[in-house]
Image (tube, rainbow, N blue to C red; front, side):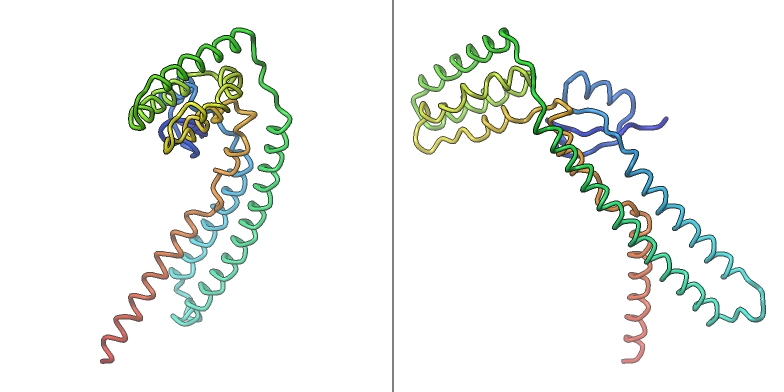
Length: 242
């Protein structure tokens, strides 16, 4: 079964793209932790890179299997080396094109997020006000730094259960939170939790930035394996010379 690519906006794996099956996708959606990514552009460049690599492998097999007397060992090695150089150049060009395309996607997503507005209802406003007052009162009643830190951890956990509209309504109430905590107590994690939205229009720039910067993973893996093999041969030759 084909998997969907999902950007995880909060919780475990936040900030990353994950390939999931239908069951895990349903769970992520139910928990409001992420959304399905459109990976069409990435997959287009990835397919091009895969095709080039497969063509090179096919050519390499054909050359190695040749029984033509003119195809000496040295000739075969030269043909393969030339084909590999051509592959290197083609992959470099494709990945350069993908980098430019990805930058375009990220910029468009940032522009979209900058002009997006979340509709906040009166019930969202009321909930946010009560939420802030309840937790502020709890903080004031805590006698020590450690107990206030514990209260803030609970507040952060509760914020993660709010919708984006509720978080938006809550943010103004949190700006004065530092005035009710003791010296040495940071409210940074609470503020970050309130600002971590999951609405696709607001997180799509981060999601776009999380897309892979390489479209030719299999090619790079092959290069690493072959380079390691070549280094091993050279190393063994040096040992033999000693």
